[in-house]
Image 1 (spheres, rainbow, N blue to C red):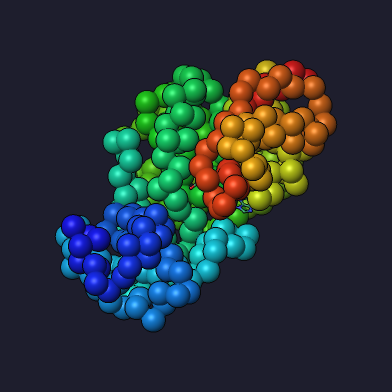
Image 2 (cartoon, helix red, strand yellow):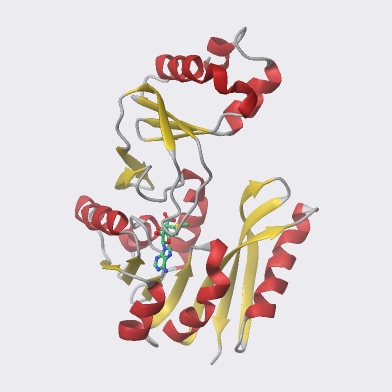
Length: 275
Ligand code: SAM
């Protein structure tokens, strides 16, 4: 139905490209538009707004995710100029600001995988916790404690709101600041499970993750990996992890989380620290 609205305005290959770069978060649509179609961005935005009844705003993503806060530039192309909305996932509610904070609906399968691994009484150190997506889904049904650290003050304010929006069995402690400094000052040797969701900089923070870990803790190490063959990526991720890991660990598994570019993937390595 959506594609029908743009038939005649866009070619079939342009339509295919557009719809693979299209996300809906609550009532906000975000899409990337190839340079060749930028002159048509208003009509694309207006058509999407008209056809997707649950949408109130359409934004064109005009920059990649970038900077310390891992945010992106958005330009309104149709509807209301508001970047905050409500998003629901696995029975949890989230206030999300798609401009001031990092947010990706494409990590939902990974969030569920981590939540399923968490056990009652686990202490989780979510080093780059953002608005609390992984932390809240994990604490929804497990009596765990999660330290949700983030350097972006907007993300921590939203995390505080999101904790209040949800009925949780576990406890979440939002902490604003640099993960390295917070671990040095407050969390050394405390974690049963360490989450490292900043794949671009995991290697810079691996020693802090090790410092935060108890004996037998599990580190979830995320990285970006080039692979000509998709099937090779989990092995390449494991090899990379072992090449940067400074102490003995058992790799429990590695897998692709999502594609992030042509022959380029976000991968995760789960490893048990045996220090
Ligand atoms: N885990 C969240 C999620 O999946 O929605 C956010 C992941 S996002 C890729 C990485 C987060 O790390 C951003 O929210 C950013 O603000 C935060 N960040 C970047 N550098 C940091 C640092 N040195 N210490 C703590 N947080 C940091």
